[in-house]
Image (tube, rainbow, N blue to C red; front, top):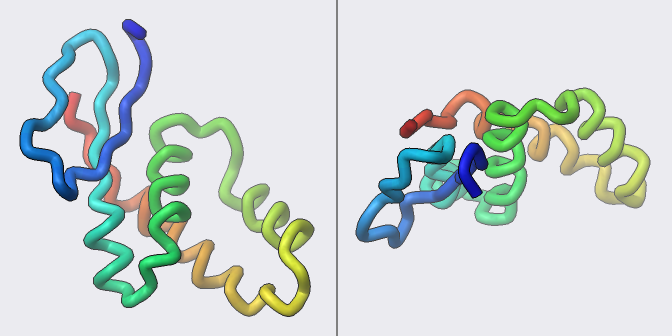
Length: 96
């Protein structure tokens, strides 16, 4: 809707969004995840980009949420996920 926000990954997009009544952001999450050799971090990259565009929670709170929700045997993956969040924040591009 007007005034809304669109965040997109340009992978496979032939024509970029052209609406002028919304905020548009681009994050090359597919490429970034592939460059890191970790396709599973795609969603965390996108989440980091989203949190930069719409800071509804702090990354520190996401980290605490991961620690509480993930079984302890998966806690070794938390640093990789935090890095992916920060990468998404860093690489977000404002289109309009």
